[in-house]
Amino acid sequence: MSLKKIIQILGEPYFSNEFVAIYHLDCKEGLQKMLANKIKIDSTITSPPYNIGKEYEKALSVPEYIDWLAEISDLIYQVTKNNGSYLLNLGYLKLESQARALPIPYLIWDKIKFYLNQEIVWNYGAGVACKNYLSPRNEKILWYVKNIEEYIFNLDAIRDPDVKYPNSKKNGKLRANTLGKNPSDVWQIAKVTTGANRSSQERTNHPAQFPEDLVLRMILGFTNENDLILEPFLGSGTTTVVAMKNNRQCIGFELNKHYCEIAKQRIEQVECLLQSKKVTLF
Ligand SMILES: C[S@@+](CC[C@H](N)C(=O)[O-])C[C@H]1O[C@@H](n2cnc3c(N)ncnc32)[C@H](O)[C@@H]1O
View 1: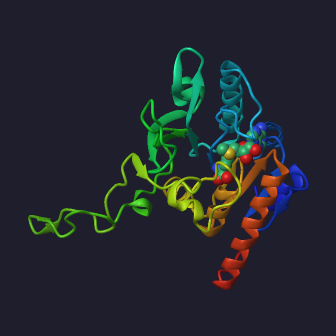
View 2 (view 1 turned 90 degrees about the vertical axis):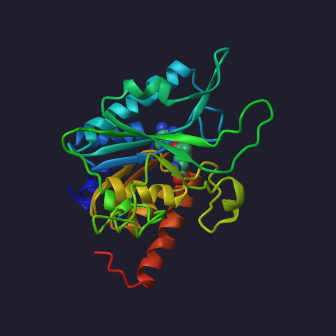
C-alpha cells in the first residue's frame, strides 16, 4: 500500500512528504488503526520509554509497564510483513529491593511474539560517571524477526572497513572481505545526548535522541530501499530522517506535540539537503 493511501486511511498527519508521515498520536491508537485497515509495514526501529521517570513518561508499575510494552509489540507483530524485523532498543530500570539497574530485555524478551534473532550491545562510550557501581556504558537492541527462514540482512551494507590486516593472504587469495569485516554484535557508537557529541550538529532538545549512525546501521543492515519503516516512539524523528536520506519511507507516532515539531523541523532540513544535492525525491 502506498504512503499516500496510508495517509488517506490514517487521517491528517502532523506532517508528511513523499517519504514520511508523522502523527501526533498514541502509537497504540495508530497501530490499532493500521491493523483494522490491513496496513502493513516492513520493519520497526524504535526505542520506547524505559519507565524511569523521564519527562516524556507516564509512571507505571513494572508489571504494568511490561504488559504495555508487550501489547504494543504484539500490535507491531500483527502489522509487520512476513520478512520484517523489529529492532527494539532497551535500557535498564530499577526493581525495588531487587535490582538497581535491571536490563529491560530480561523482563520482556519472551513476551514478544517475534523470534529473537540476536541481541546487539550498543556501547556508547561516554555517560554518567558513578561512584558506588560501574558507570553504565551500554544498552541493548533486540533484533527480532518475524520469520527465521526469511528475513532481511544486508551484511555487505554494514561491513566495518577497519580491518587489521587487509592485505593478509591465504593460498594467494585475500583473507579479508574487501568490503570489510562483519561489524559484530557490539556496536560502538557515541550518544548525542552525552559526552563530546552533545555539541554535535544533529543534537536537538530531545532528552533521549538516537545518534543517526546507530539508526543508519539498522536501516542499511535490516531493511531494503523503498521499505516502509515504522517508528512508534518517534521522539525527535531520528529514524525518519535517516530513512529519508537512505531512500526508505517512514511512519511515526509521537504523543508529545513539541517533539513532533522538532521532528518536523529535522525532516524539513533533510528535504532541503536532498534537494540541494539534486536527489530526486520520487
Ligand atoms: C526514548 S524516546 C525516543 C527518542 C527517539 N528515538 C529519538 O531519536 O529522538 C521515546 C518517545 O516516545 C514518546 N512516547 C511515549 N509514549 C508514547 C506513546 N504511547 N505513543 C507515542 N509516543 C510515545 C515520548 O514522548 C518520547 O518522545
